[in-house]
Length: 68
Image (cartoon, rainbow, N blue to C red; front, side):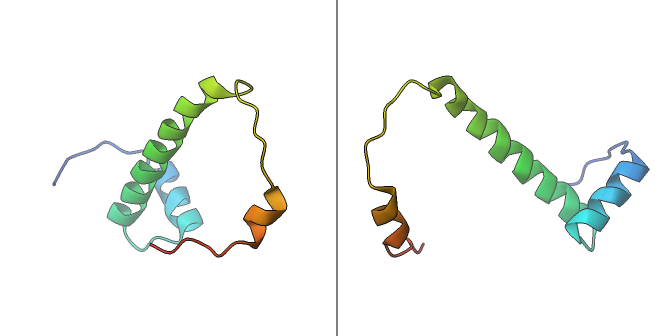
């Protein structure tokens, strides 16, 4: 989708450098995905300290990784 935006040129240049992105579109899309991911994770903060976990962390670390 094409959209016209007024962007902070210095912020965009810095983001492109840090991300190693080749295009403005790539860095903006990456930033949007990361923003949505972080905002989504914030929903779980309301559960902090509410549950007690009883598990074997060492066993979890030794299991095979899940492949998608």
